[in-house]
Length: 462
Ligand SMILES: Cc1cc2nc3c(=O)[nH]c(=O)nc-3n(C[C@H](O)[C@H](O)[C@H](O)COP(=O)(O)OP(=O)(O)OC[C@H]3O[C@@H](n4cnc5c(N)ncnc54)[C@H](O)[C@@H]3O)c2cc1C
Image 1: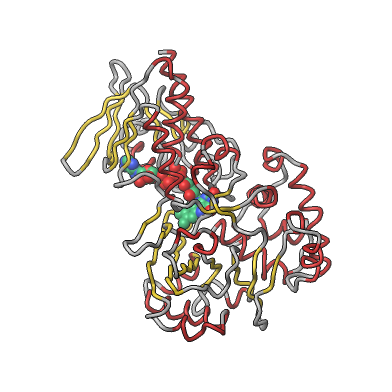
Image 2 (image 1 turned 30 degrees about the horizontal axis):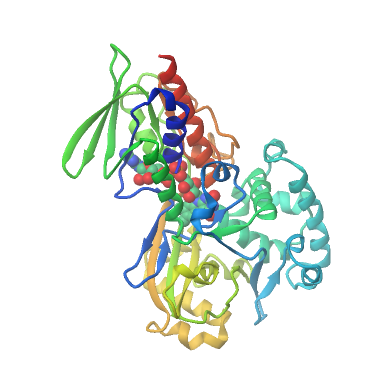
Protein backbone atom coordinates (compact mmCIF):
# COMPACT_ATOMS: atom_id res chain seq x y z
CA UNK A 1 0.00 0.00 0.00
CA UNK A 2 2.90 2.35 0.71
CA UNK A 3 4.40 1.63 -2.71
CA UNK A 4 1.10 2.29 -4.44
CA UNK A 5 0.67 5.54 -2.52
CA UNK A 6 4.24 6.55 -3.42
CA UNK A 7 3.77 5.91 -7.12
CA UNK A 8 0.47 7.80 -7.20
CA UNK A 9 1.91 10.75 -5.29
CA UNK A 10 5.00 10.87 -7.52
CA UNK A 11 2.97 10.66 -10.71
CA UNK A 12 0.68 13.47 -9.53
CA UNK A 13 3.46 15.68 -8.19
CA UNK A 14 5.41 15.47 -11.43
CA UNK A 15 2.45 15.33 -13.80
CA UNK A 16 3.88 18.05 -16.06
CA UNK A 17 7.21 16.22 -16.43
CA UNK A 18 5.70 12.89 -17.47
CA UNK A 19 8.09 10.78 -15.46
CA UNK A 20 8.43 7.14 -16.32
CA UNK A 21 7.49 5.36 -13.10
CA UNK A 22 7.76 1.60 -12.65
CA UNK A 23 6.31 -0.24 -9.65
CA UNK A 24 7.93 -3.64 -9.03
CA UNK A 25 5.96 -6.09 -6.88
CA UNK A 26 7.43 -9.50 -6.07
CA UNK A 27 4.05 -11.13 -5.51
CA UNK A 28 1.63 -12.17 -8.26
CA UNK A 29 -0.79 -9.39 -7.24
CA UNK A 30 -0.76 -5.98 -5.58
CA UNK A 31 -1.66 -5.25 -1.96
CA UNK A 32 1.12 -6.70 0.23
CA UNK A 33 -0.50 -7.23 3.59
CA UNK A 34 -3.88 -6.08 2.24
CA UNK A 35 -4.89 -9.09 0.17
CA UNK A 36 -8.01 -11.21 -0.23
CA UNK A 37 -8.75 -14.56 -1.84
CA UNK A 38 -12.01 -15.19 -3.64
CA UNK A 39 -12.87 -18.90 -3.49
CA UNK A 40 -14.51 -20.70 -6.41
CA UNK A 41 -17.63 -21.30 -4.28
CA UNK A 42 -18.15 -17.61 -3.55
CA UNK A 43 -16.40 -16.70 -0.28
CA UNK A 44 -14.09 -13.72 0.21
CA UNK A 45 -11.26 -14.49 2.58
CA UNK A 46 -9.13 -11.54 3.58
CA UNK A 47 -5.61 -12.70 4.29
CA UNK A 48 -6.04 -12.11 7.99
CA UNK A 49 -8.96 -10.31 9.59
CA UNK A 50 -8.70 -6.61 8.80
CA UNK A 51 -11.09 -3.69 8.75
CA UNK A 52 -11.17 -0.55 6.68
CA UNK A 53 -11.05 2.38 9.12
CA UNK A 54 -12.82 5.20 7.35
CA UNK A 55 -11.45 7.99 9.51
CA UNK A 56 -7.79 7.53 8.53
CA UNK A 57 -6.67 10.87 7.04
CA UNK A 58 -4.49 9.21 4.39
CA UNK A 59 -7.27 6.88 3.29
CA UNK A 60 -9.60 9.86 2.97
CA UNK A 61 -7.01 11.63 0.85
CA UNK A 62 -6.25 8.76 -1.54
CA UNK A 63 -9.22 6.41 -1.70
CA UNK A 64 -12.62 6.76 -3.34
CA UNK A 65 -14.92 5.34 -0.67
CA UNK A 66 -18.05 5.21 -2.85
CA UNK A 67 -16.62 2.76 -5.32
CA UNK A 68 -15.53 0.43 -2.49
CA UNK A 69 -19.23 -0.01 -1.58
CA UNK A 70 -18.38 -0.13 2.11
CA UNK A 71 -20.61 -1.78 4.70
CA UNK A 72 -20.07 -0.60 8.25
CA UNK A 73 -19.66 -2.53 11.45
CA UNK A 74 -21.98 -1.45 14.24
CA UNK A 75 -20.08 0.67 16.75
CA UNK A 76 -19.16 -1.04 20.03
CA UNK A 77 -18.72 -4.77 20.45
CA UNK A 78 -20.29 -7.91 21.81
CA UNK A 79 -18.30 -9.60 24.54
CA UNK A 80 -18.21 -13.20 25.72
CA UNK A 81 -17.85 -12.87 29.48
CA UNK A 82 -16.89 -15.75 31.77
CA UNK A 83 -19.93 -17.50 33.26
CA UNK A 84 -22.50 -15.64 31.16
CA UNK A 85 -24.26 -17.41 28.35
CA UNK A 86 -25.54 -14.35 26.50
CA UNK A 87 -22.99 -12.17 24.73
CA UNK A 88 -22.76 -8.86 26.58
CA UNK A 89 -22.93 -5.59 24.71
CA UNK A 90 -20.51 -2.67 24.75
CA UNK A 91 -22.34 0.30 23.32
CA UNK A 92 -20.93 3.52 21.94
CA UNK A 93 -23.52 5.95 23.33
CA UNK A 94 -22.15 8.84 21.27
CA UNK A 95 -23.36 7.27 18.07
CA UNK A 96 -26.57 5.54 18.98
CA UNK A 97 -30.05 6.52 19.94
CA UNK A 98 -30.95 7.97 23.33
CA UNK A 99 -31.80 4.52 24.63
CA UNK A 100 -28.17 3.49 23.94
CA UNK A 101 -27.12 5.55 26.97
CA UNK A 102 -29.14 3.21 29.10
CA UNK A 103 -27.74 0.14 27.29
CA UNK A 104 -24.22 1.52 27.80
CA UNK A 105 -24.72 2.13 31.48
CA UNK A 106 -26.47 -1.17 32.16
CA UNK A 107 -23.97 -3.32 30.23
CA UNK A 108 -22.33 -5.96 32.43
CA UNK A 109 -18.96 -5.13 30.82
CA UNK A 110 -17.23 -2.83 33.31
CA UNK A 111 -18.54 -1.11 36.39
CA UNK A 112 -20.44 2.21 36.56
CA UNK A 113 -17.14 3.81 37.47
CA UNK A 114 -15.48 2.40 34.33
CA UNK A 115 -18.24 3.92 32.24
CA UNK A 116 -17.80 7.31 33.86
CA UNK A 117 -14.05 7.01 33.42
CA UNK A 118 -14.56 6.63 29.69
CA UNK A 119 -15.68 10.26 29.59
CA UNK A 120 -12.23 11.87 30.09
CA UNK A 121 -10.80 9.46 27.51
CA UNK A 122 -13.51 10.30 25.00
CA UNK A 123 -13.05 14.02 25.76
CA UNK A 124 -9.31 13.73 25.13
CA UNK A 125 -9.61 11.99 21.77
CA UNK A 126 -12.42 14.27 20.60
CA UNK A 127 -10.74 17.53 21.54
CA UNK A 128 -7.15 16.77 20.51
CA UNK A 129 -5.91 16.52 16.95
CA UNK A 130 -4.15 13.32 15.90
CA UNK A 131 -0.84 15.16 16.01
CA UNK A 132 -1.55 16.38 19.55
CA UNK A 133 -2.31 12.81 20.63
CA UNK A 134 1.16 11.85 19.42
CA UNK A 135 2.70 14.68 21.50
CA UNK A 136 1.16 13.29 24.72
CA UNK A 137 3.38 11.64 27.29
CA UNK A 138 4.10 8.08 26.20
CA UNK A 139 3.76 5.00 28.37
CA UNK A 140 2.65 1.43 27.79
CA UNK A 141 -1.07 1.07 27.19
CA UNK A 142 -1.72 -1.07 30.27
CA UNK A 143 -0.22 1.60 32.52
CA UNK A 144 -2.16 4.28 30.67
CA UNK A 145 -5.49 2.45 31.10
CA UNK A 146 -4.90 1.72 34.77
CA UNK A 147 -2.93 4.70 36.08
CA UNK A 148 -4.13 7.51 33.83
CA UNK A 149 -7.77 6.54 33.30
CA UNK A 150 -8.17 4.27 36.37
CA UNK A 151 -10.12 1.53 34.57
CA UNK A 152 -10.77 -1.58 36.65
CA UNK A 153 -8.83 -4.80 36.00
CA UNK A 154 -12.07 -6.46 35.01
CA UNK A 155 -12.92 -3.81 32.36
CA UNK A 156 -9.40 -4.02 30.94
CA UNK A 157 -9.34 -7.79 30.74
CA UNK A 158 -12.89 -8.26 29.49
CA UNK A 159 -13.01 -5.51 26.88
CA UNK A 160 -10.00 -3.23 26.36
CA UNK A 161 -7.38 -5.99 26.24
CA UNK A 162 -9.05 -8.23 23.62
CA UNK A 163 -10.08 -5.15 21.60
CA UNK A 164 -6.65 -3.47 21.52
CA UNK A 165 -4.65 -6.69 21.31
CA UNK A 166 -6.79 -7.66 18.32
CA UNK A 167 -5.70 -4.43 16.64
CA UNK A 168 -2.03 -4.18 17.58
CA UNK A 169 -1.52 -7.96 17.87
CA UNK A 170 0.44 -7.94 21.10
CA UNK A 171 0.08 -7.45 24.88
CA UNK A 172 -1.00 -4.07 26.20
CA UNK A 173 2.41 -3.81 27.90
CA UNK A 174 4.01 -3.80 24.44
CA UNK A 175 1.68 -1.17 22.98
CA UNK A 176 2.20 2.58 23.02
CA UNK A 177 -0.35 4.84 24.73
CA UNK A 178 -0.05 7.18 21.74
CA UNK A 179 -1.15 4.47 19.33
CA UNK A 180 -3.96 3.61 21.75
CA UNK A 181 -5.26 7.19 21.75
CA UNK A 182 -4.92 7.35 17.96
CA UNK A 183 -6.92 4.19 17.29
CA UNK A 184 -9.47 5.07 19.97
CA UNK A 185 -10.03 8.40 18.21
CA UNK A 186 -10.41 6.67 14.83
CA UNK A 187 -13.08 4.34 16.23
CA UNK A 188 -14.81 7.06 18.26
CA UNK A 189 -15.09 9.54 15.40
CA UNK A 190 -15.44 7.19 12.43
CA UNK A 191 -16.53 3.72 11.45
CA UNK A 192 -14.88 0.44 10.60
CA UNK A 193 -16.13 -1.16 7.40
CA UNK A 194 -15.58 -3.91 4.85
CA UNK A 195 -15.45 -3.23 1.09
CA UNK A 196 -17.73 -5.27 -1.18
CA UNK A 197 -14.70 -6.74 -2.94
CA UNK A 198 -12.86 -7.60 0.28
CA UNK A 199 -9.88 -5.66 1.59
CA UNK A 200 -8.08 -6.42 -1.68
CA UNK A 201 -10.45 -3.93 -3.36
CA UNK A 202 -8.61 -1.10 -1.58
CA UNK A 203 -5.31 -2.19 -3.13
CA UNK A 204 -6.93 -2.83 -6.51
CA UNK A 205 -8.40 0.66 -6.50
CA UNK A 206 -5.01 2.23 -5.84
CA UNK A 207 -3.47 -0.04 -8.51
CA UNK A 208 -6.03 1.18 -11.06
CA UNK A 209 -5.42 4.76 -10.00
CA UNK A 210 -1.65 4.39 -10.39
CA UNK A 211 -2.03 2.71 -13.79
CA UNK A 212 -4.39 5.53 -14.85
CA UNK A 213 -1.65 8.03 -13.99
CA UNK A 214 0.77 6.17 -16.25
CA UNK A 215 2.60 4.08 -13.64
CA UNK A 216 3.93 0.83 -15.18
CA UNK A 217 3.00 -1.94 -12.76
CA UNK A 218 4.99 -5.16 -12.89
CA UNK A 219 3.86 -8.00 -10.61
CA UNK A 220 5.97 -11.11 -10.11
CA UNK A 221 9.19 -9.06 -10.20
CA UNK A 222 11.34 -9.33 -7.13
CA UNK A 223 14.17 -6.86 -6.59
CA UNK A 224 17.18 -8.61 -5.07
CA UNK A 225 20.01 -6.12 -5.38
CA UNK A 226 20.40 -2.36 -5.81
CA UNK A 227 23.56 -0.57 -6.85
CA UNK A 228 24.37 2.99 -7.74
CA UNK A 229 26.61 4.03 -10.64
CA UNK A 230 29.40 6.32 -9.43
CA UNK A 231 29.49 8.33 -12.69
CA UNK A 232 25.94 9.71 -12.78
CA UNK A 233 24.20 8.40 -9.64
CA UNK A 234 21.79 6.17 -11.59
CA UNK A 235 20.41 3.26 -9.57
CA UNK A 236 20.46 -0.22 -11.05
CA UNK A 237 17.96 -2.69 -9.67
CA UNK A 238 18.45 -6.40 -10.31
CA UNK A 239 15.14 -8.15 -10.56
CA UNK A 240 14.17 -11.82 -10.59
CA UNK A 241 11.02 -13.00 -12.30
CA UNK A 242 9.69 -16.19 -13.90
CA UNK A 243 11.39 -15.39 -17.18
CA UNK A 244 14.76 -14.91 -15.51
CA UNK A 245 16.75 -11.90 -14.42
CA UNK A 246 16.47 -8.33 -15.63
CA UNK A 247 17.79 -4.88 -14.72
CA UNK A 248 15.97 -1.62 -14.18
CA UNK A 249 17.78 1.73 -14.36
CA UNK A 250 16.32 4.65 -12.42
CA UNK A 251 17.28 8.18 -11.44
CA UNK A 252 15.31 7.86 -8.25
CA UNK A 253 14.07 4.88 -6.28
CA UNK A 254 11.59 4.32 -3.45
CA UNK A 255 11.89 1.12 -1.41
CA UNK A 256 8.40 0.29 -0.16
CA UNK A 257 8.80 -3.00 1.69
CA UNK A 258 8.99 -4.19 5.28
CA UNK A 259 12.04 -3.05 7.24
CA UNK A 260 13.51 -6.57 6.95
CA UNK A 261 13.38 -6.63 3.14
CA UNK A 262 14.68 -3.05 2.93
CA UNK A 263 17.60 -4.05 5.17
CA UNK A 264 18.46 -6.93 2.83
CA UNK A 265 18.26 -4.69 -0.23
CA UNK A 266 20.32 -1.88 1.27
CA UNK A 267 22.96 -3.57 3.42
CA UNK A 268 25.11 -5.15 0.71
CA UNK A 269 25.88 -2.23 -1.55
CA UNK A 270 24.12 1.04 -0.85
CA UNK A 271 24.79 1.27 2.89
CA UNK A 272 27.81 -1.01 3.14
CA UNK A 273 30.16 1.96 3.67
CA UNK A 274 27.99 3.75 6.26
CA UNK A 275 26.99 0.70 8.34
CA UNK A 276 29.01 0.62 11.53
CA UNK A 277 26.99 -2.28 12.93
CA UNK A 278 24.27 -4.50 11.46
CA UNK A 279 20.80 -2.92 11.45
CA UNK A 280 18.73 -4.38 14.27
CA UNK A 281 15.50 -5.83 12.94
CA UNK A 282 12.30 -4.36 14.36
CA UNK A 283 10.19 -7.04 16.08
CA UNK A 284 7.21 -8.14 14.04
CA UNK A 285 3.84 -9.35 15.23
CA UNK A 286 2.37 -12.61 13.94
CA UNK A 287 -1.35 -13.17 13.60
CA UNK A 288 -3.49 -16.02 12.31
CA UNK A 289 -7.01 -16.19 11.00
CA UNK A 290 -9.23 -19.25 10.67
CA UNK A 291 -12.26 -19.09 8.41
CA UNK A 292 -15.39 -21.25 8.60
CA UNK A 293 -18.26 -21.41 6.13
CA UNK A 294 -21.66 -22.18 7.63
CA UNK A 295 -25.28 -22.25 6.55
CA UNK A 296 -27.30 -19.08 7.28
CA UNK A 297 -28.21 -17.71 9.71
CA UNK A 298 -25.03 -17.00 11.65
CA UNK A 299 -25.37 -17.46 15.43
CA UNK A 300 -25.27 -13.66 15.69
CA UNK A 301 -26.83 -11.75 12.81
CA UNK A 302 -25.41 -8.41 13.93
CA UNK A 303 -22.57 -6.66 12.05
CA UNK A 304 -20.33 -6.35 15.05
CA UNK A 305 -16.98 -7.45 16.44
CA UNK A 306 -17.18 -10.22 19.07
CA UNK A 307 -14.46 -10.21 21.72
CA UNK A 308 -13.20 -12.88 24.06
CA UNK A 309 -13.77 -11.22 27.44
CA UNK A 310 -13.46 -14.41 29.49
CA UNK A 311 -10.22 -13.22 31.09
CA UNK A 312 -6.52 -13.78 30.45
CA UNK A 313 -6.69 -17.44 31.52
CA UNK A 314 -9.19 -18.24 28.76
CA UNK A 315 -7.74 -16.16 25.94
CA UNK A 316 -4.76 -16.37 23.56
CA UNK A 317 -3.40 -19.68 24.85
CA UNK A 318 -3.92 -23.41 24.51
CA UNK A 319 -6.72 -24.67 24.77
CA UNK A 320 -8.43 -21.23 24.58
CA UNK A 321 -6.91 -19.71 21.43
CA UNK A 322 -9.54 -17.16 20.38
CA UNK A 323 -8.98 -13.41 20.76
CA UNK A 324 -11.87 -12.14 18.67
CA UNK A 325 -14.27 -13.30 16.00
CA UNK A 326 -16.64 -11.76 13.52
CA UNK A 327 -19.08 -12.83 10.84
CA UNK A 328 -17.78 -10.78 7.88
CA UNK A 329 -20.72 -11.87 5.70
CA UNK A 330 -23.13 -10.31 8.19
CA UNK A 331 -21.24 -7.01 7.85
CA UNK A 332 -20.81 -7.27 4.08
CA UNK A 333 -23.07 -9.78 2.27
CA UNK A 334 -20.59 -10.29 -0.59
CA UNK A 335 -18.24 -12.23 1.71
CA UNK A 336 -20.36 -15.41 1.42
CA UNK A 337 -22.68 -16.91 -1.20
CA UNK A 338 -26.42 -16.66 -0.72
CA UNK A 339 -27.68 -18.92 2.06
CA UNK A 340 -24.28 -19.14 3.77
CA UNK A 341 -22.19 -17.11 6.19
CA UNK A 342 -18.51 -16.72 6.91
CA UNK A 343 -16.95 -16.76 10.37
CA UNK A 344 -13.50 -15.27 10.90
CA UNK A 345 -11.53 -16.19 14.03
CA UNK A 346 -8.43 -14.19 14.99
CA UNK A 347 -5.66 -15.92 16.88
CA UNK A 348 -2.71 -13.99 18.23
CA UNK A 349 0.98 -14.78 18.43
CA UNK A 350 0.96 -16.24 21.95
CA UNK A 351 -1.64 -18.87 21.08
CA UNK A 352 0.02 -19.71 17.77
CA UNK A 353 3.21 -20.27 19.69
CA UNK A 354 1.42 -22.69 22.05
CA UNK A 355 0.05 -24.73 19.13
CA UNK A 356 3.46 -24.82 17.43
CA UNK A 357 2.07 -25.78 14.02
CA UNK A 358 -0.51 -28.30 15.28
CA UNK A 359 -3.33 -26.80 13.23
CA UNK A 360 -5.66 -29.77 13.74
CA UNK A 361 -5.53 -29.14 17.51
CA UNK A 362 -6.04 -25.43 16.91
CA UNK A 363 -9.15 -26.08 14.80
CA UNK A 364 -10.51 -28.50 17.42
CA UNK A 365 -10.00 -26.03 20.28
CA UNK A 366 -11.46 -23.11 18.32
CA UNK A 367 -14.58 -25.18 17.64
CA UNK A 368 -14.86 -26.18 21.30
CA UNK A 369 -14.56 -22.57 22.40
CA UNK A 370 -17.12 -21.38 19.83
CA UNK A 371 -19.51 -24.17 20.80
CA UNK A 372 -19.52 -22.77 24.34
CA UNK A 373 -20.04 -19.22 23.05
CA UNK A 374 -22.94 -20.29 20.83
CA UNK A 375 -24.59 -23.17 22.73
CA UNK A 376 -27.65 -23.19 20.47
CA UNK A 377 -25.42 -24.06 17.50
CA UNK A 378 -22.88 -26.18 19.38
CA UNK A 379 -23.53 -29.36 17.40
CA UNK A 380 -23.18 -27.52 14.07
CA UNK A 381 -19.98 -25.79 15.18
CA UNK A 382 -18.42 -29.13 16.12
CA UNK A 383 -19.55 -30.81 12.89
CA UNK A 384 -16.82 -30.28 10.29
CA UNK A 385 -19.32 -30.89 7.48
CA UNK A 386 -21.59 -28.06 8.71
CA UNK A 387 -19.04 -25.47 9.86
CA UNK A 388 -16.55 -26.13 7.09
CA UNK A 389 -13.04 -24.81 7.53
CA UNK A 390 -12.37 -22.57 4.52
CA UNK A 391 -8.85 -21.45 5.24
CA UNK A 392 -6.13 -20.75 7.73
CA UNK A 393 -3.80 -17.81 7.24
CA UNK A 394 -0.70 -17.42 9.38
CA UNK A 395 0.93 -14.04 8.81
CA UNK A 396 4.37 -13.71 10.39
CA UNK A 397 5.18 -10.10 9.39
CA UNK A 398 1.75 -8.67 10.10
CA UNK A 399 2.83 -5.49 11.91
CA UNK A 400 6.10 -3.95 13.04
CA UNK A 401 6.60 -3.15 16.72
CA UNK A 402 5.45 0.34 17.64
CA UNK A 403 6.75 0.63 21.18
CA UNK A 404 10.05 0.85 23.02
CA UNK A 405 12.31 -0.24 20.18
CA UNK A 406 14.71 1.89 18.24
CA UNK A 407 13.00 3.13 15.09
CA UNK A 408 9.64 1.62 16.04
CA UNK A 409 6.49 2.46 14.12
CA UNK A 410 4.63 5.17 16.02
CA UNK A 411 5.55 8.39 14.25
CA UNK A 412 2.40 10.07 12.96
CA UNK A 413 3.21 11.83 9.67
CA UNK A 414 6.22 9.57 9.17
CA UNK A 415 9.98 9.81 9.62
CA UNK A 416 12.35 11.37 7.09
CA UNK A 417 12.00 9.28 3.97
CA UNK A 418 15.63 9.83 2.98
CA UNK A 419 16.91 8.10 6.12
CA UNK A 420 16.87 4.36 6.77
CA UNK A 421 17.14 3.35 10.43
CA UNK A 422 18.94 6.59 11.22
CA UNK A 423 21.37 6.37 8.26
CA UNK A 424 21.24 8.86 5.38
CA UNK A 425 20.37 7.35 2.03
CA UNK A 426 22.06 8.45 -1.20
CA UNK A 427 20.39 11.36 -2.97
CA UNK A 428 17.38 10.21 -4.96
CA UNK A 429 16.72 7.14 -2.80
CA UNK A 430 13.80 7.03 -0.39
CA UNK A 431 12.03 4.53 1.86
CA UNK A 432 8.41 4.14 2.92
CA UNK A 433 6.26 1.54 4.64
CA UNK A 434 4.31 1.30 7.87
CA UNK A 435 7.56 0.90 9.84
CA UNK A 436 8.54 4.45 8.75
CA UNK A 437 5.33 5.94 10.24
CA UNK A 438 2.70 4.06 12.27
CA UNK A 439 1.99 0.33 12.18
CA UNK A 440 -1.29 0.90 10.36
CA UNK A 441 -2.69 1.27 6.87
CA UNK A 442 -2.71 5.02 7.54
CA UNK A 443 1.01 4.89 8.32
CA UNK A 444 1.79 2.92 5.16
CA UNK A 445 -0.17 5.35 2.98
CA UNK A 446 1.17 8.56 4.53
CA UNK A 447 4.77 7.35 4.38
CA UNK A 448 4.20 6.42 0.73
CA UNK A 449 2.86 9.87 -0.13
CA UNK A 450 5.88 11.49 1.58
CA UNK A 451 8.34 9.33 -0.35
CA UNK A 452 6.54 9.77 -3.68
CA UNK A 453 6.51 13.55 -3.36
CA UNK A 454 10.17 13.54 -2.30
CA UNK A 455 11.13 11.44 -5.33
CA UNK A 456 9.18 13.68 -7.71
CA UNK A 457 10.72 16.81 -6.16
CA UNK A 458 14.19 15.34 -6.47
CA UNK A 459 13.65 14.47 -10.13
CA UNK A 460 12.30 17.93 -10.88
CA UNK A 461 15.48 19.51 -9.54
CA UNK A 462 18.21 17.37 -11.12
C1 LIG B 1 -3.87 -9.59 9.03
C2 LIG B 1 -3.60 -8.12 9.08
C3 LIG B 1 -4.61 -7.28 9.48
C4 LIG B 1 -4.40 -5.92 9.52
N1 LIG B 1 -5.42 -5.12 9.89
C5 LIG B 1 -5.26 -3.80 9.85
C6 LIG B 1 -6.35 -2.94 10.13
O1 LIG B 1 -7.47 -3.40 10.38
N2 LIG B 1 -6.14 -1.59 10.12
C7 LIG B 1 -4.90 -1.08 9.83
O2 LIG B 1 -4.75 0.14 9.82
N3 LIG B 1 -3.85 -1.86 9.54
C8 LIG B 1 -4.00 -3.21 9.54
N4 LIG B 1 -2.96 -4.01 9.23
C9 LIG B 1 -1.66 -3.40 8.93
C10 LIG B 1 -1.60 -2.88 7.49
O3 LIG B 1 -2.19 -3.81 6.62
C11 LIG B 1 -0.15 -2.66 7.11
O4 LIG B 1 0.40 -1.73 8.04
C12 LIG B 1 0.05 -2.10 5.71
O5 LIG B 1 -0.70 -2.77 4.76
C13 LIG B 1 1.53 -2.19 5.37
O6 LIG B 1 1.77 -1.75 4.06
P1 LIG B 1 3.25 -1.54 3.55
O7 LIG B 1 3.17 -0.99 2.19
O8 LIG B 1 4.00 -0.78 4.57
O9 LIG B 1 3.93 -2.98 3.54
P2 LIG B 1 3.56 -4.34 2.80
O10 LIG B 1 2.09 -4.51 2.73
O11 LIG B 1 4.33 -5.39 3.50
O12 LIG B 1 4.08 -4.13 1.35
C14 LIG B 1 5.38 -4.45 0.93
C15 LIG B 1 5.29 -4.98 -0.48
O13 LIG B 1 6.60 -5.21 -0.98
C16 LIG B 1 6.60 -6.41 -1.72
N5 LIG B 1 7.98 -6.89 -1.75
C17 LIG B 1 8.67 -7.48 -0.75
N6 LIG B 1 9.91 -7.76 -1.16
C18 LIG B 1 10.02 -7.32 -2.42
C19 LIG B 1 11.08 -7.33 -3.38
N7 LIG B 1 12.26 -7.84 -3.10
N8 LIG B 1 10.85 -6.81 -4.62
C20 LIG B 1 9.62 -6.29 -4.93
N9 LIG B 1 8.59 -6.27 -4.04
C21 LIG B 1 8.80 -6.77 -2.82
C22 LIG B 1 5.66 -7.30 -0.93
O14 LIG B 1 5.19 -8.38 -1.71
C23 LIG B 1 4.56 -6.31 -0.58
O15 LIG B 1 3.58 -6.23 -1.56
C24 LIG B 1 -3.13 -5.38 9.17
C25 LIG B 1 -2.11 -6.23 8.75
C26 LIG B 1 -2.35 -7.59 8.69
C27 LIG B 1 -1.26 -8.50 8.19
